[in-house]
Image 1 (cartoon, rainbow, N blue to C red):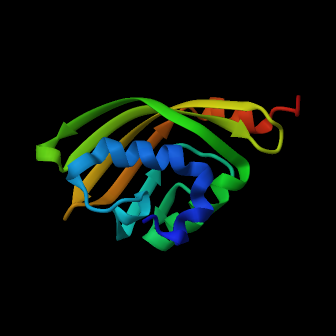
Image 2: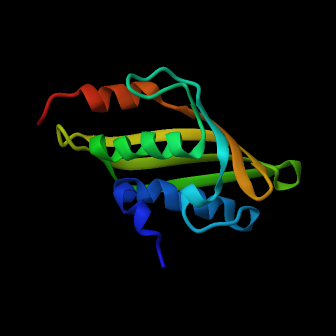
Amino acid sequence: MPNPEYAAYKAVDPYFDLIRGALGGLVDGEHFFDIVTDDVVYEVLYNFPGWPRIIQGRPDLMAQFRGYGDNIALQSADKLIAHKTDDGRVVVIEYEVHGTVLATGVKYDNRFCSIIKIENRKIAHWRDYMDSLVAWNALTALAR
């Protein structure tokens, strides 16, 4: 049964489901937040207003993602390519997300590449790359 604590993150479920599926049996837990360590480091290698470059710890990661759903509702995540290295301790994933910017109704389609380090069957470190210009254009577009 899904954890009711995660209901607030419904808008991000396509992303969470894609990540959980990409990691399969390499990690333990059902939901994205179940498969990260308590002291996870989530690092983004882009500057984007309102999103910190480094998020440390599961509680802060949960707080940051809670706000994501206030701005963008994801409809899907796809085009997954997973590269497992170092006996599954490092996974590189490429994928796309598709959604709508809630304030304007503008469509949001972006590409990502994430490098994930796994320790003791949990995500210990995440390094993320995305097309920042696509995100900026979608979030700053005028309502149509």
